[in-house]
Amino acid sequence: METETKTQEKNGFIARGWDRFKALPGNIKAKAVEIAKKTKKTATDDPRRITHCLKVALALTLVSLFYYFKPLYDGFGSESLWAVLTVVVVFEFTAGATLYKGMNRGLATLLAGALGVGANYIASLLGKEGEPIALGVFVFLLMSAYRVDEIIELAHKRLSTIMLGVAICIVISIFICPVWAGENLHNLVANNIEKLSSFLEGFGDEYVRVLDNGDTGMVTKKDKQFLQGYKSVLNTKSNEESLANFAWWEPGHGKFGFHHPWKQYLKIGVMTRKCAFHMEALSGYINSNIQAPPEFLRKIQDPCKKMSSESGKALKELSLAIKTMTHPSSVNAHLDKSKIAITDLKTSLEAASRETNAELLKIIPAVTVASILTDITTCVEGVAEAVRELSREARFKRVEMTVSKEKTPLIGQESVKPVNSGDGGGEHVIIEVHGVLLESSENENPHAPKKG
Image (tube, rainbow, N blue to C red; front, side):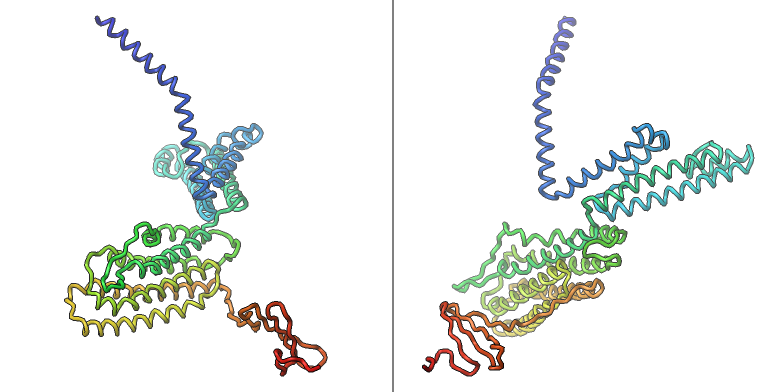
């Protein structure tokens, strides 16, 4: 009975192994398909990720030659493995991060090597009895029992291979499809402001509305993602700080000079997140079931919508100014309209509170929304001031508004063209009406019949 049981177990084990072997091609195919889908998704979301993988592969290939290619291996020996490890540790997605980690690793290796050689030299001066004790104290710097000349040779080879790996990483990161941390920071800040702009421009149409029959209703459209865009702005502080730190290490590139004010982007980010926090409080009232009386809402609806709309337009202008690196001169008009709306809102609130006999608890939500919108308008002014400071420090170009002297074509394809006759006879005017040219002198009626 026991033998039969063992035989059955053995047969079952063999059967399971055979089933797994038969399923192996299908599993490999499924895994390959899954990897292909992930690669395609990554390439669609950010093609630079695929390029980064190829750059890392190129760097690893180059440094591996020093370990597997015999002529190069004879020059560095087993220490060439440190070049491979350096590429794995140092190579980052952005050029600034690669420079930052590469420089730190090179300097740290140089300092540690110097301390290790010094510690070993000091220990050798203490004699046979004191040397083990000194080496035990200095073990955290370099653990070795070699003589001083061998230690120097070891440190030289290790430092050389590490610096070789760092140099390969930096060259590939900067000169082959570079990804700049500064450019990422620039775009991140501009896109965050644009997300807040989309929220404010859409909020006025999504909040409490007064219908034609005098009723009120809450309009909520969860499918509109722009009302949720502000949430991603709340968690960008650490990303902005790291990008600003890496951007400081980068050389001048593209439209960004060597001394570009990267720290100013952090100030803009602080003001942007402050606006986003107010918007988070504001978004809670979109789904609120508490409704104020229609009479009260009619009084404050227009100023609230105007504040939201004009603040959104101001943020959109600021975002565009950062993207195009132009001075945000046109934002003042929207900010002035927002301030006028605040004044109108205060007047409307006073009038509504006197004319409507609404209970206090019913009008609190609507008044709170108006108060938050007022705070957001103040925050937008802070963002505008921070962007203006950036434009001054980075020397953004100023776009001068010029008025064209050309006349706009009239209805029916009519156009007026002043023409200088060139003979001192003054100016002529050519009028084109439906393809028929009529010519007149400066003071002549072009529509009058010509004298024979």
